[in-house]
Every structure is written in structure tokens, then in C-alpha cells.
Image (cartoon, rainbow, N blue to C red):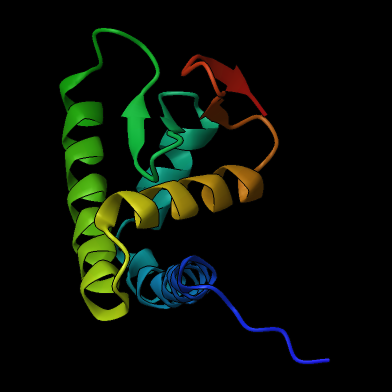
Length: 122
């Protein structure tokens, strides 16, 4: 039995493929800033958001935390933009897909946003 995929299913599949491809360049770039991000995540200074970015957990954040968040999010947005341009879905779709995946893969004890946007420890 042959099943035809709808346009939406194709886009979703392409978005998932694009999100998977996102992890490769991010993994290659990780050594430059992974220790700082990992340390900030472990310390509970930042958390993973549902839209694929990081954000400070405490308000107001220290200037160093703000700088880290801005740097990491700029790198992520650049990758999301490349994926969206190459695969067709809009950047918001890529952000949601990656956000879901990053939260699922976050280490225990990491702050993540729940469906209401509140910070919880995984």
C-alpha cells in the first residue's frame, strides 16, 4: 500500500530534517562556547525556552549572563535562518521544532520552560 504525503507532512518532515542538520553545525561550534553555556545551565542561570533559545532564569540577570544569552541566541538564530531558507518552513516552525527537541534532550536539573512559559527544573 502506497501512502501519499500531504504538503504539510512534507514540510514537517523537511523541517525535522533541517532541525537535525542544525545540530551538526552547532555541535561543530560547541567547543568555542559550550563550557560557558553548560556551566550557566548547570548553575541555573539560564534555561532552554520553548522557542529554541536560552533565556536568563533570574531577573535581573548579571551582565555576563545577558552577554552569554545574546551571543548564544544570535548563533542559534543564524542557524535557524539558514535551515528555514534551505528547507522552506518559516523560522518560527524551525524554532518550535528545535525548542521541543532541546528541551527533551536537556540534562536533568536544567531549567526549561513548560507549556505556560514558566521555568521548571527538568
